[in-house]
Amino acid sequence: MTGLFSAPVWPLHWLALPVFLPVFSAVLLILMHRRSVRLQRIVSGSSVALLLLGVAALLISGAGDQHLVYPMGDWPAPFGIVWVYDRLAGLMLLLTAGLAVVSFLYAVATDEDRRGPHFHALFQAQLFGLNGAFLTGDVFNLFVFFEVLLLASYGLMLHGGGAKRSRAGLHYMVINLIGSTLFLFAVGALYGVLGTLNLADLAVKLGQAPAQNYAIIAAASLMLFVVFAIKAAAFPLYLWLPATYAETSAPVAALFAIMTKVGLYAMLRVHGTLFDADTAPAAFVDLVAPWQIWLGIVTLVMGTLGVLAAQNLRRQVAYLILASVGTLMIALGMRSEAAISSALYYWIHTTVLSAGFFLLTDMIRRGRAHGDSWQSAPPMAGMVLIGSLFFVYALAMAGLPPLTGFFGKVLILSAAMDHPLRTPIFATILITSLLAVIALARSGTRLFYRVEQPRTDAPASVKPNTWAWIAVVSPLLVAALMVIGAHPLSSWLEGTSSQIARTPAYIQAVLSTDARASTHPAFPVHPIHGMDPGMDPGMDPGMDLGTNPGTDPGTDPGTTAGGTH
Image (cartoon, rainbow, N blue to C red):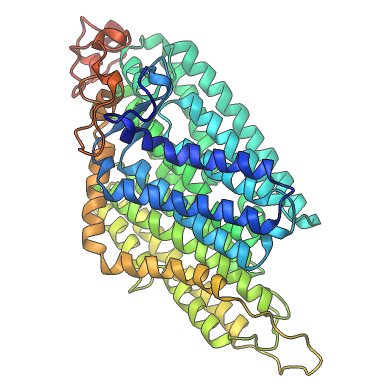
């Protein structure tokens, strides 16, 4: 066993930073829960800042350009737990850390963290679950990290109390408990049939499975799809989201902007790996994708109708997140590299700006006499600046030029040009964008133009402090950088999409001792990479993963009988 900080190998252990830093911080914050809030803020803030710097340095260094595999305890896949770091995982970690920073700043600036105990410990536990879900290389640990992030999110959602918050939290917990139960059934079924839960090993065993097991595998895979659809809030499993996001505190809602992306990430990672055309039997290749497109279309329509019907701005922003989930499901369902690349651009846009819009909504709610409802109220302090920010956020979220929402939708529509369902995709995205513009224009008019004369006896508006302004404006700066650097960002995302599509390379990296070793200079070869390739009984060392393992009738009679390609 190699020492943790031995000189030749210690950089690879940096891949553990996004998981261990939040969990150590959470434990430390629990131990010091009787200490002052100021001290807890210092610990939590330092952890979040270090996490952002760490994951940004990892991504900028190019560490994810090749699959990096970190075997926990030096146990190789599929026997041990492995974390797999690539461009997609790095992007998700960076988004999570960025949201954590703005959410933390706003929570401290508005004293939301003082409204109940253990806010910062729960906050760090939430980051632990999110980062673990993005890094894990097996389905069982994906389930475990889902449970961790859900448990933390229950606490964060209810932080501060209140009847409406408790009622929304109850719905949120019940639907997610149902999802967790289905997840456990699906994991058990897959393990019972294929004998493994490592994602790369599952992809290999799927190609070797006899045809009589296809029905069980398909049922388990569809159950997983339902679970991920619950996490992503896709139709018809989205009803928990608007109330949950609208009733919880603003910094928590901003952090939750990444939560729906966890479900979409799991769809992309799990089903994209298991049902890749290069490695999976033909019976599974189109098992999920057609559902994704139609569910995405319906989710987008329902989300937009919710935006039109919402009775306050917080609920309207929650429905905007729902609409973005529908748009992303449409793009991911097309399953082409161009569609995934465009989806990732829109993914970054909607995650960052949804978080910022929630914070701005809270600023409006605190400054107006009637909160964020459509009822007319006297002018709030700083109304010109806040109204201008609302205008920019509304333009971006509705998808109007020149901001990121417009670029993201244009890229998705461009990717849909050759798809058989291009007509409903074009019609749905364009019409819902127009309806979103109408709804947000109406909201802006009600909030900032229909104002009453100020009353002399009215209490003074709450003025946000500097840190709150920084938290609200930062997402817009990110969006501006995405527009300015659209070309290099799109090129990088095209490379990321290409990497996602290379499932054989992912499998080789995780299961093969030859290919998984990084050639990146910052990450020397881990000593376990020198082990005998024959350690993995589930993989033939001579197998060519660039083709479907089921194509050799002599190797896999079951797949031949099942009509595999």
